[in-house]
Length: 191
Image: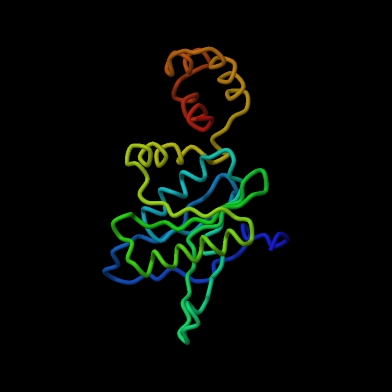
């Protein structure tokens, strides 16, 4: 498993889309990898934005593999597709299942436990995560609009790093580098 790059894997299943659907699937452009990563709900999107902002994360793959097993020797197979595979800067990995705490049915808990056990066997971490704090999610959503490399202008970024090497107010620091209308997007990119 070590030589397999799950962070580069394609999705093993597609996201359904139909009239009256209660969740909102889509694609998020991740600045970390410069690629689109799929999500099936706004809860998943919140975690994608969180992962994209973490400096230790270098890649995220959506629906990267499917586990299948026969619990207790039963004839009927059980399968589960985790939501995300995350590669960290140090080469370690974590598999994420995203589900709000109040929406975990007993059979889901069994699948999450089996996924955690399978991940432990191959040396990966496993996390079942719920809803991102609403304030954090709102801030991540806003800042994610500035993550694209086209927003970064190096002379301005260098000036901002120099100004904010010392504590100071946001707007005062931006004005010290230039016109805030031009400087603030670069500042938000750096944040």
